[in-house]
Length: 430
Ligand SMILES: *Cc1c(COP(=O)(O)O)cnc(C)c1O
Image 1 (tube, rainbow, N blue to C red):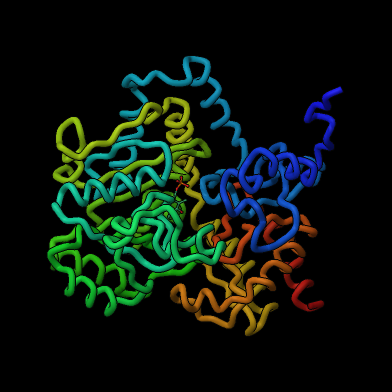
Image 2 (cartoon, rainbow, N blue to C red):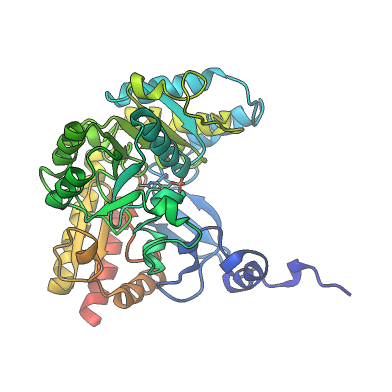
């Protein structure tokens, strides 16, 4: 008798065994494999509010929040209702529909630097399109990015990238042609004089500088005062396009982007994550004279069978409307800051807690963490131990040191308090 897969036990480890047979590494995105923290990755059967439920029936407070999109937590009833209603009227048309116009209007209102925006299906597509646009607009080939910044997995951007590629401990991905890699220049994060040197040396060749305005993929690393302003000035000086990758930061810290907090206006903005409310989406927007280079108006080609997908668009609109209504940002920042202070005190000078708004990273190094080199001083093994101790206590952190933890508007004071207490106990017993 042939045994069906269902005779395997549906535990996380049973599922991971099955997965490894048919999915490379058992995962559909590398960091999910727990490679840097060790142990068996968890399998989730549902999420509700701030919690996830594993297939074993354990409830965990989720500080990963699907890597950022879930600023309203899991299965927020109003979003679920909106998505179900929309799905009932058709999952995809590949034809224009009213909600895509509404979402574009919403985004352009929220981002003053954005006169036009095109919807795509992921953050990766957004940054890939942004680069093509910048290159088409300027007629130049080179781009400048930062060590430890992650902008999705298109060829040009997989050089010295953050997130999973950093966890894997490699400088770049195999399979990226040398001819492509040579056009990606890399500078250390927060190092304006390096940026000035590079932009002076390649002033007629650089199409764009691309940056996460707050770095979130080497752990959370804030821009130093003047750094983003400096990028703007360098771009102005050499006629390059400034691209802010706000895939994480868009609607994470305020209604709109980090650009409205720092006051620096990019030429192109990339969005994703929160603007899809948990559904796959991305967006690339900016000033009209650049965006109108896109096909069908201009010669820069970009397209997508599922772009502007009605269900994803509806999840996004509903999320943004709720955020505008409840304005949770100040409260979320308060919750994180209090927990971060306690953890920081408990960990003493062997850790350094980076935080901003509803985002934080506990770095297992003395700090300060200001760039990739200082982030990499972290004791990642010790992070792995901390991760598993928190997991055992019922808290799911990102399963890698170089990632950012998030809370949502439905996380409570009591959950943050319990988390901080669990961390205090771990540090005192360690
Ligand atoms: C997640 C992320 C991306 C890639 O988005 P995907 O939807 O995973 O393709 C790009 N840029 C930043 C800053 C991100 O955090």
